[in-house]
Amino acid sequence: MSRIVEGQTPMSAPVQAAYSYCEAVTGRQARNFAYGIRLLPTEKRQAMSALYAFSRRVDDIGDGRLDPVAKEERLDATRGLLDRIRKDAVDEDDTDPVAVALSDAASRFPLPLGALDELIDGVLMDVRGETYETWDDLKVYCRCVAGAVGRLSLSIFGTTPGARSAERAAEYADTLGLALQLTNILRDVREDAANGRTYLPADDLAKFGCADGFRAAAPPPGADFTGLVHYEVRRARALFAEGYRLLPMLDRRSGACVAAMAGIYRRLLDRIERDPLAVLRGRVSLPGREKAYVAVRGLSGLDARTISRQTVRRHA
Image (cartoon, rainbow, N blue to C red; front, side, top):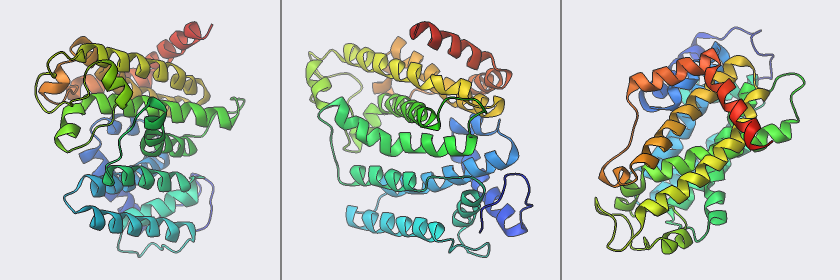
C-alpha cells in the first residue's frame, strides 16, 4: 500500500470492512477513548480505531490467561505482523482485519510504527512481572504503554500550520500519555494487586506505609493510603498541565478529541482525589452521560479554552 494524501483516495470494500471491524472493537471496548475518537473526521477516526484495535490486541495478550511463555510467543508473532506492515507486505485480501486497517492507516498517515514495538515492550514488562522502585523507573513503563500511543495519535492528528516544533508536540503528547496511565494505575490499584501486579513505585509505597499491598477493601493497618493517593494525584495533575500544552497545536477536531479523552480521565482523577478509598472498594468510573457531556464540551472548544487558560497561568 503506497503513501497517499489524506482524503484523496477512495477505499476498497475490503479495506472499508476492515476499518468497520476496528471501529466496532473501539466502540465496544474503548470505554473512555471512544468518546473522543468519535469527534474526529472520518479518515482520522478510522486510523485511530485501527491503532486502538491493534493496541487492544497487544493488551489482551498481556492480560489473558495464557502462561508467560505462550504470551511471549504471541507478542513475538504480533511484532512480526508489524514487520509485515513496515515492509508493505499486507494486502487488502489478508484475513486479519486489524492488519489490513493498520496497514492502510500507515499508508495515509506517517505512523511511527516503532512506537507499537514500544507498546509490546511495555506489555512484556507485565508478562515478566516487573516492579518499579522509583517514579523514573515507572515512567519507562508508562512511556511504553501510553506515551507511545500518544505519539502515534499525534501522527494522525497532525499539528496546525505555525505551531511549535513537532518535537515539542511529541513531548507533550508523550507527557499526556503518562498522565492518563498514572490515572489508570490509581484507578486499578486493587484489581492489579489481585492479579499480582504492583505499579506504584516502591519508594512511594514505603513512604506512606503501603508496602504490603492492596489486596483488601481497606488499606493495611497503619498505612496512610489517602496520603499516597493524594501524592500520586498531584503528580498526575502536573503531567496533565504539561501535556495540555499540546492542545493549541492541534486543529479544532483533533483538539476536541484530545480534550474529551483527557477530560474524562481528569474527572476520574477528581473522583479518586475526593474519595481515595473508593479504588479499594471497586473500579471508579464515570457514567456514560458524563462522558458524553465532556465530549460535547471538547467539541465546542469549552474544555480546550479552559485548559489552555489554566496552563498559561501555571506557566506564567
